[in-house]
Image (tube, rainbow, N blue to C red; front, side):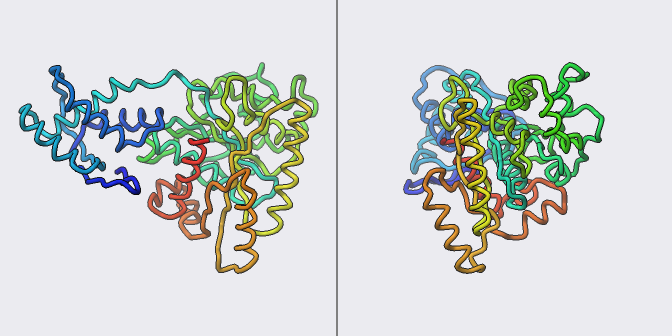
Length: 381
């Protein structure tokens, strides 16, 4: 259910709506970056102003639906429903259908690419990658998670198995595309969870990735573009692709950074890097090394690589001055901004043990809310 906008008087609407309309509303609102409660309010206002006879919508087996409307609008809507001789459920369905007709999906946008990276291990790249992808899928987007780390933590944490050495994988499509026998899309697997409704898929890790740097050394072609070349056929199928990168500064990481670059005709900040850090000194040192790699790659190949933001992970103020002062230093950078501060609490560890997505396992925990905050931050980039 939508939450009331701060600073605006809203009242709760509780009704029912056909499942297909609820899904269409959720997806369209996400595509247009509109809050669902604002979409419903606009639909009701358009419905009240409409003088044409609207088609009757089949509301049999309608599911529960709730949102918040500007104060007074719900009562006015119910009065109009009585005057028109339709049920509140029918009126709401017509209003949402009218909004969908009046607000068609925008032309297909370029797939946004988010590369989650830091050459320091243990800072939470996997947790942030999974959480961001789940939050985007929950909001209605079609999302692909790419486990680009040969250690395969993301794959295993979601209850899947990495692709054995020698079998076709992302690495095959990067280094030996002419030998690939099936589309890379066929290797992706849907992540279960009612909140994702089939919109979230993962490309599992491959053990062959341990040899990716050496393979890229002898690769015939632009090595830094190998990942982009492999993933390009998938982009028509997804609104966003999230890459969980290895803790590396090698050629494989060059390819990941290149994949997140700003493309021609793409607005600044639409795609780029999300960098998990911790509130301690070694994270700052590792961040400095990553910045050097980004700067070097950008100069060598004339690339624009946007840092969309930092995520301060596993934060615990009880660790004292080091933690709190480090957090303030991260925030004081200003650019890139701190997108979220994720507390070090138990739900993420429990979700890993259960081999479930965090937002599916504990959708209302603080960590899940912060993952959604990251998703909101990159949507406004």
